[in-house]
Length: 415
Image 1 (spheres, helix red, strand yellow):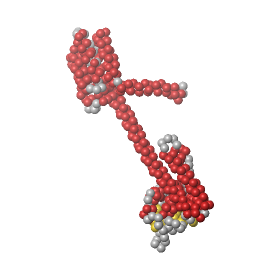
Image 2: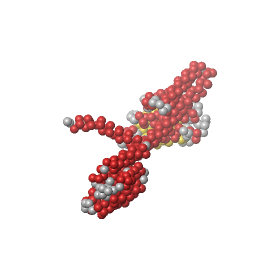
Image 3: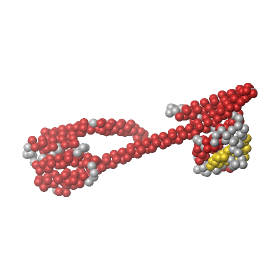
Image 4: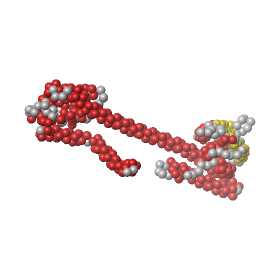
């Protein structure tokens, strides 16, 4: 048979054995006393059968041992196994007393070998230094038997017992090592899961912060446009009803856009599975600047643009440039005052470098200068810092009235 085919044929049996072992261990963890009682009952029954059937006579050095003493020795060498996992050292010391009597009388009951089960549990659960005195307790009856009854040589009897102890210890150490390794893997898996959850929470917090910036940029701009249109419509209502109607139409259109953007961003913040639909919406880029500028112009702020070079920026940099221009124009609509104008100068360089300068000629009569540096400018600086750029925002020189925002993104560095 092909080895691969043979392995596949044996795999279901292996899985079945693994599931069965897992269930037995789970039952043992839930009911340790019940499991220990079954194991102890099995060995007590085996010891009593050896006593009643007379099987002990095949190995005995003395066939005249009283029956009552044999019964006590059989029970004394088997019943303590009930506590072998919780108190292995006390159990071994108790069994060693009965083993010494067993060796001295010459009964040589096979139940004395159950001490090896206790040695196994000491190697499995106790510090390994406990094995020294445990070995001494198990070998002591052998020395007594050889000294009193003189059957076999010292090296044969002691060597055979040491070999049995070594096997029990090796099994216990092997199981202990594997158990520690499994626990270490489980602990590592738990820590990795905790770290994964922490990273997910951090990513969620970062995404919510990004969404908050987007909401500020979008809604702040649209509301500023609506405010400008409303102010213009109020003055136009008395002189030109047609211009007032156009202003109201523009207000309605801008309001609908703001509501659409708000709904989309709130959908992203929901914890249901609506993220995929929201992520499919493209972020604004340089191709959307014309639409942005048309909205600002309709709100009453004339804007003139000058472009140098060819715009070949990746989407992330385009979004940063778009949001900075949007925030600067929003501030101009809020604070520049009546009769102000704005100018945008874009200079595209090689390898993704770009410089954008937005200036307005406002007098700041609606508010004082420091109010401009609200929540919008920190958001613009955060976006700029993502690409190692610089952002300057402040009043123009005294000879030139107004406000200036200058963005510079350096060349893209290869990863």
